[in-house]
Image (tube, rainbow, N blue to C red; front, side, top):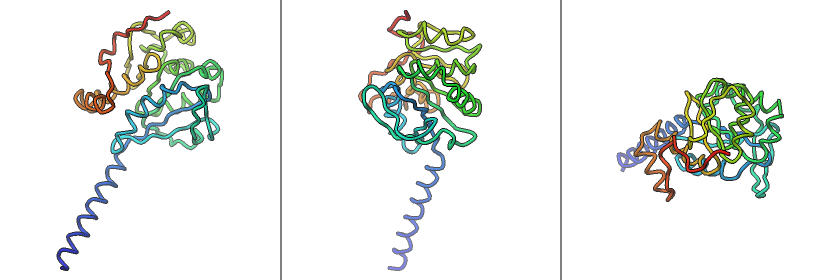
Length: 223
């Protein structure tokens, strides 16, 4: 009986140690929020990354913290941006109507620049690329954005090599996607780059999503 009891405790300890190790190995995705964000820009990638609990951990941040909402009346509680560590692993910047205002928010742009410079990866969805472009970090790099708002986004920086045809674009650690649903395609592309194409296809199948795997050809045309 003592031996069985010892084995039971040992197995529990092994499982607890394994779970602890998995949690330590997860990469934090810091999602930078602002009012009037686009719902699917956030929750599309959040569905994809969030289900991979042993690999990624989602956290939501804004300049002042507290509740952020949008025109769809989807509120979300956020932490203050200043509470992010010095070396965030992955940053995700959504788009939405709020970007029209936030491109002139120097405090937010400066914070995005500061955090992006020390992060491992930076992902933008839709017009979120306008905020990153405004920081200057996309200068000389290839990027894309929402095709319906392409003229406005590209006007935020003429030093970026804007691609009108791409579904999503990769330049070093920077991933930029086209509009709204394209953020999900980019998120799956990111998984494919890090974990293999079969892994990404399995995730897409689990959420019953028809993944557009070709990052270089968007069905939507830039205006």
